[in-house]
Image 1 (cartoon, one colour):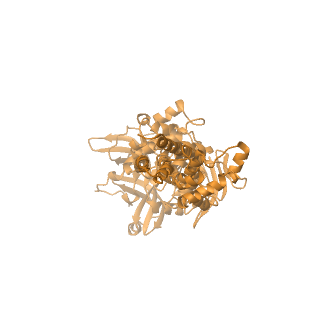
Image 2 (cartoon, chains in turn brown, blue):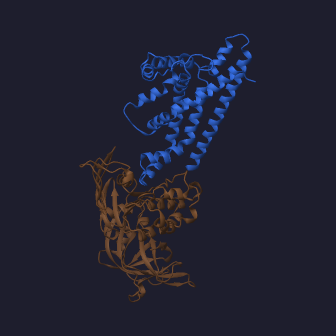
Length: 371
Length: 230
């Protein structure tokens, strides 16, 4: 649990937030300049708020009224920075063990983290011999080995290219699942956050613009506008229902958010199966899909004689206009957002509660990794 | 090859140079760290004071030292009254003179090296539980070491060449305070002093060249390191 109520003024920028975040991963989302990194620095103790309180798991780290300001090194907050910040004069092993003394996790627990992040083969290497992705993995391991009570990840993937990001995210998911600790994951890319968690804290110009689950937040205009401005992507959790290697596609069943893998349930209805590009995951495995809102077309009825493979029935729950574009939230079991032109939306006379079909080309579905 | 007198000048110079480094090393690095990493009132004044020996005529520095460390000076008087310890016109005076003259060079180089060490890496170390001391010993000092070493070499070279402050504060006593430059000056003042003066001159040139080359090599190492870390 994190509870922070802090205020900081710097030039013409003011950060003024009051929020709580839970025991698991929370995504901190906002455009650049929103104050995300400042917030991370305040919690870690690298910057000092003008006033307020910061508490982690009930332990007060900062309280301007009571004159409490626990120094950085005694806060026990692990930070993975945008740049790796590894120690260039230490080996990988030396970096990993730097914070592992006394209160840290040397020994068996440390070995478990090293295995989890597959750092074993890198231990003897020097930092300059590592690739960008390896460096961030070592930085993550180093933070975890110091046995923090909170992990702060400040855009840890932003210095990596897209391919490397997709390689690191599975490790972050493992950490999320196997090492129970509160985490704040900062990013200005919603799709990256959604691949880790759907609990969100949204920041805009130094203020909280919304907090809660992504699904709920997408019903709030301010939050929706913020996400839209940064480039929106639907992230959909699905279960592999079958493969058709001869035909070159895989079948996916959409899992409702939070639902257990539905192996005992009745087989999904035919129309709930999505046709997607072939994937390597086994039948029954959960995968994360990304789908851009502009890749979804809406139709009032099933369309005949069209090459588009997926015609997913759903119900319109919401329509909003942003910059001459219409964002339509459709519940297809999970909410997905489609982006239409105003003219296109007008031709359908969209309103909440209306039944609709989402037309999605199978190639518009991209795999973000295992769920 | 060298006469006893010349040998004693060379050995004395080396001894004085090593002692001057021993005196300045810790305060020099501490001063460099303060100037590089801390903001405090009066920083400009401290910075100016550190650089003063670089711009003052060496004779002035020597005279100031004589006033402070002489038997009737505030520090020298106290040392003499309390411990019977004489400073002025002993080899210690030569060491202090060359320490004071070399101090700014050491501080400048060490400060630059510390400033070039990424403070964000120090922050990362602190989030891992390292207090300021541990950060200094394990991160700041090792990463700035090549630059600090270059500063030490420069200040040794400066100490080996120290003349004005030495002759004013320590005098020209054979085997006690007659360092290489003082001895060379002495030989140029007497007939038939050319040969020994030239020999000592050659030694001075060799020592200074060696120091500069060593310093340059260390400077290259640091830039390579910083290039590799970026």
